[in-house]
Image 1 (cartoon, one colour):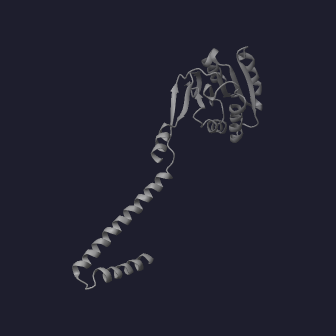
Image 2 (cartoon, one colour):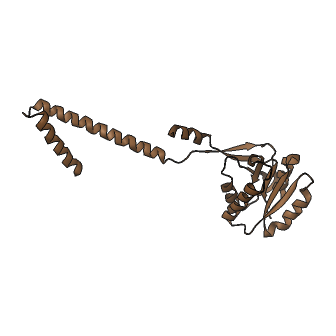
Image 3 (cartoon, helix red, strand yellow):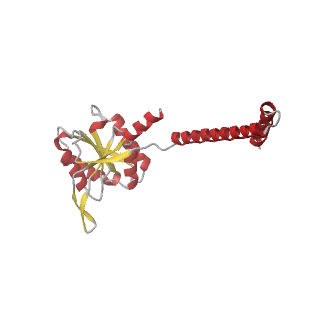
Amino acid sequence: MALGVAGNMLSDLAKHYLAPGGEPVRLWLILAASIVGLFLLVSLAYSAGAIQRRLIAPISYQVVDRPKPRPARGLIAFVSLQQRDHLERALRYHGDRLERVWLIATQDAEALARQIKDEFETDKRKIVIAPLNHQYELLRAKEVVDHIYQTQLGELKEEEVIADFTGGTKPMTVGMIFACLSPSRSLQYVPARYEDGRPNDALDPVEYGIDYGALGKELEVRQ
């Protein structure tokens, strides 16, 4: 309504100042000018809307997988009551380069964690058991992983440590993934061959990371 009233007022003013005699030619010119102005106004509003949509668009990223990753100096891994083949495969894969290991274990899995620690700990490789109160505590699992990265790496850099989510429950897995959204933190998964629906043979780990390259390009465009 306000736009209509303003339009009528502008039209009357335009006729008064530009076409005092009410000549049809001048009135047609006014009409054409009004249409052009309205087109420009709509175009500007559309452009502003497109810019707004661009600013609130979701951030783009890409999850990449890297088979046969470079052996890490540090490993964070869940201890599973179901099987230990994947964990043994991961420990052997990273081999002599592996200096620090953190085994995240619930109370039920602590005995198995101590057994693995006794078998694989050496003078050059320190293994620490990190307790987790409950296997379905997603946020607690994230906190445990974050705490390891933030306070226990020592001389190791985050890029030299990899987090293995193979043996965790779904909440534990999601918690570890949430803790490793930083580009400097990598994840790994140990796949397996299956026989009769059950894992039969653990394979070499596959590394997973988040590629923020597309995000960097997008931020440059926005700036």
